[in-house]
Length: 78
Image (cartoon, rainbow, N blue to C red; front, side, top):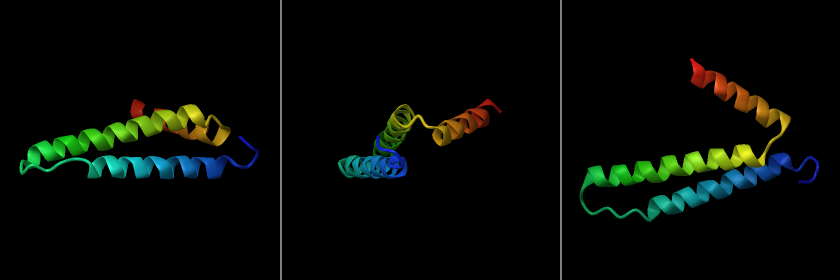
């Protein structure tokens, strides 16, 4: 990564993940049963968020991101 290109790279990554998650949500078929649709929607959205967070943290290991990660760890311990 080029120096000072970190914020642009992070924004591009997150924008592309948002686009992918939106496309996956639009692929879910609604067959008239709300419970099934909401279940499928939850799986798609939360799996997408989890993968995005995992990939983001493994890809952008910088001081400012690492400090955010340590703060996130603190909030889950309480």
